[in-house]
Length: 205
Picture 1 (cartoon, rainbow, N blue to C red):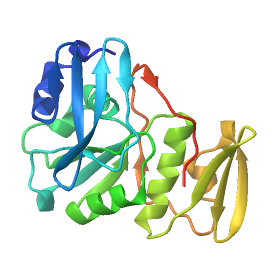
Picture 2 (cartoon, rainbow, N blue to C red):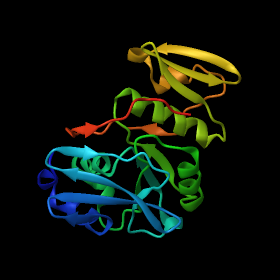
Picture 3 (cartoon, helix red, strand yellow):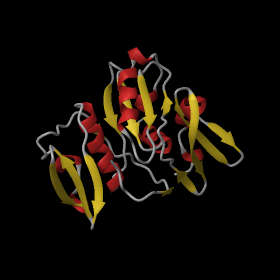
């Protein structure tokens, strides 16, 4: 999907949280009120940063936000809202955050401290990096962490000092929940979109 194919209401809602430079749309990722990275969207697709910063969009006071959507990219989130525009209707206290291609716990901790009353939904894609991100968020919500890697077409993770190994094709949040330390506390949603992107190899901690 290209930017102009998005519903006008979606483009208008997110307009304050992006910049248009020539033929590119830039989404700023900030850390401590400083812009440190950008996500880039043009006719050739989306380039998602690996960043410690967060792209954030909301027109509500943080304490009033009831639903927080977290994804890999601003482009994913906007495409999600194209299909589910009820989340951006006026006076709907929603917030949207992109963590970049390889989310880290510090990003999530900051968001959770900012939106203390929000239910968290994940809007990662259905690829292996998105499924790993779903699992990461689930563990972070209960104050734990798990280490993930991709080895010989298997997703490996360490949880409670044990190593688990699942074929990439079967790797999912549900399979990850078989680990005793993991519980499902977020609601994963696979965004419907047709974005082309550049990706990095999966190797996360």
